[in-house]
Length: 136
Image 1 (cartoon, helix red, strand yellow):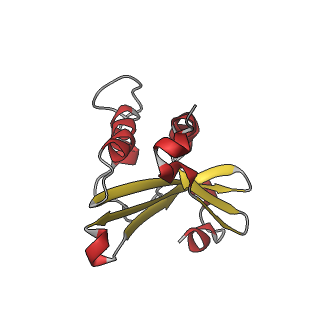
Image 2 (image 1 turned 90 degrees about the vertical axis):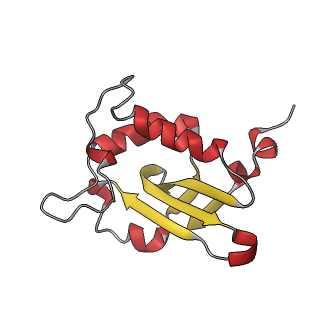
């Protein structure tokens, strides 16, 4: 029987740097990821780090307009629309085995442009420890 990594090779990707490991987000990571987000990302009083406040949407499991449903759909869509000419990878960031944040890589026309854009965030409890520098 084929493995998931053989069906979708990005699942085999693992990037390590000291105590960090980055790997492609899997469904089994989602409950832990939702808990991390619910614990907070933005430091109160600082400017919002995102273009929209997806991390502040009401926690409403099963509600089509609430978190985590909106975020789950976003992560699943990234996989479903992955193509050589335009792709987006959501990577979990684990420090000493604990999920601490996400690092996204996305590209359009990568074969020609050779350019990747990134986005990242860390749970509030994991900020200020040098993890962001290592993961980037």
